[in-house]
Image (tube, rainbow, N blue to C red; front, side, top):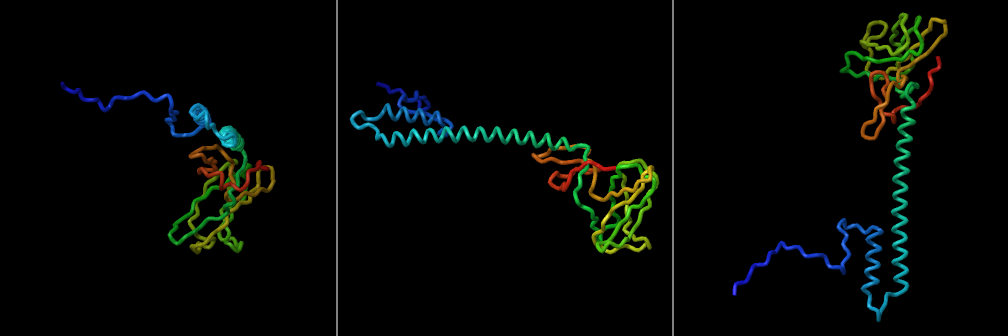
Length: 224
């Protein structure tokens, strides 16, 4: 009599005596099902030890508490992240100071460009570049101009026309507004024009550049 071949791909229904957990993670529901199945399958003549039962019940409670705590922490982290983003956005329009007052000049440099922010209209004044000892090496006279960010290009010569040595140089400006009041400004201090978020990090637009918020030393209101 011919024998029919058996299809090896035939799926069998899962046994009702087994607890399946397709994600291979013992969450509180799987733990509870396993615990109930263990009670159902125990030998009536040799029931589970009371201490072991209490131990497993305590484990279930601990697991549920950990899950609830993790959920709470996730919600808190999300709320803190949203609050931090709102606080960051609220800085738009305020002054940001990176504390970077110096230009680094190397032998390969032919010139150095930089920007300064003037919070009031300019009647007259000077941009002053000093060496590390505080000696003035270069002066740029300022002409009348409206307030805002001005760009400068330094050819790396001093006031005598000589090329300055490779070093770091401090940049600042003193100017007078049309009402006769004296003001000061310096490299590294600019208004925050906009905020950009990239890879979970905030960047502030200072002048023509976007600067990570982690590099900002101080945020304050401009005092004219």
